Structures are given as structure tokens and as C-alpha cells.
Image (cartoon, rainbow, N blue to C red; front, side, top):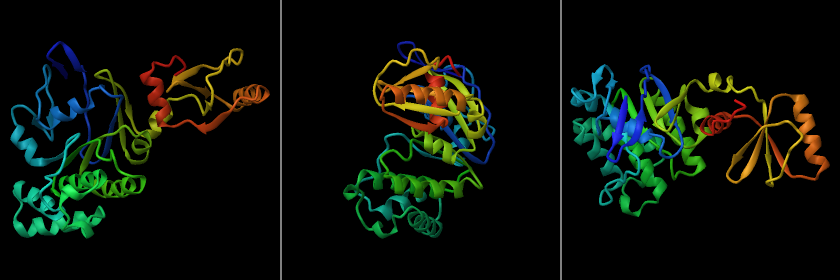
Length: 290
């Protein structure tokens, strides 16, 4: 599948992907990688320039009504209707989706309680914090009985506690439906996902479970240097991250050599195990040591 915007801006370049109908899929990639474009195509908000996409067996262009009827979406940078109360927002969203009044009332209360919003049900959305507004959007989308939930960076702006509360609800929903979400939080992808899809410059670069992807990294440790210093002579490859350096270490012998080198020169560092975030950095930066 290909998507080209005016000015010959290529957002997606030959993406091909098949996903099962249950669990959590995390789509990760740097800004401008094509994540939101892919979500928009799959939710029928824009058309592919070339190729085709199916959701639940329905063509997203020719059978868009069937796709919309069976899916639910939290778009990126969305905002709730500010003049409605928290309860009204979820209730009327469900009514707009065609649910009867009694079911809408029940589901609105259920998901407001699950997301810690029930005590704020009578508060106007305009008076909520940014994080609480985001939770209202998530509650509205998840309350819809759908087969697939598309969530574009749903936990942006949430504090760590609220994020984990959302994670628990997503895990519960994923037992019977598919959740397809984008995120910039690698720990979120590692903690939540059954499948991780890494995209960069409109192309898929990795697809697999967190365990499978971590198994592709031959390194066991990373050493984060506190200063931008030279480490010539150690034989260890480095990656430039945020103006600093990260060293990726393959084994205990190499680790011992590097630490001895750094300590002997009085250099500050932090030692951590390799994570999914490190694979992401390696792939995006085309790290030669991968």
C-alpha cells in the first residue's frame, strides 16, 4: 500500500501487513514515519494512493460503511465536546453510534468507572485537565461495542498512574477485540503489545512480538554516557542519542572491558539491560551493529 500527498510527499511506501482479530498491536515509529496516515487509511478517513487495505474483510474504500460500523477510533489530537459533561459526552457518543438509550447509559457508566472518571461525570469537559479530556475520549471509544479499536497515541498527556489505568482497561478489552494503537512510548509497546509493528519513512522495518524482536538484538547491555566522550580503543560501536552516546555491549567480557575503561578515566555512566527502545533506535538510525 502506498500513500503520496501533494508535493510528492510519500507517507507510506509499500506497506504490507496482515493482523489477527484479537490482542494489542502497537505501531511505533519516529515523527513523520507514516503511523497516523496508516490509521487514517484503515479507518476510512483517507484513501491509499496505490494498493488496497481491508479491515475485517471489508475494503476500506468500497465498503467503508461496513468498516466504520465495526470499528471505533480515538484520532490523534482529538478533543472532547467542551460544552458537554463527562457523562453526556460518552452517552451521546454511544447514541450517535446507534446504541439504544439503556445500553448507552450502562456502557457510559461502566467505562467511566473503569477509567476513573465516574466521580467527575457531572463536570463540563471544558473544566477538565488535558489528561482527563484524553481519558474521556478513550472512554467514549472503548464503550462502543466494536471488533477493532484504533487509538492514535491515546496515552499522550497522561500521568504515569493514569497511563497504567488505561493499560489495564486495554488489556481487558483486548481479550475479545483487536486494539491497534500508535505510541511513542517504547515501554508502553513492550508492556502491552502482542505484536509490535515498527515503521520508518513509510516502510515497515520490524514486525513481531516484543520477545521476538528483542531476540534479534545480539547485545545484552547498554551503557549511557553522561558526557560526550571518546571511547576509541574499546572496539565498541556507539549510537548518538539526544546529543549523547549510548554503548551497546554484547557480553560480560566486553562489558567488563568497557566499564574498566570508563572507571579508569573517571567517566560517568549508567548501566541498563537492552530494551525494545534500543532496537527501535538501532533500526531508525540504521545502526551497523544490529
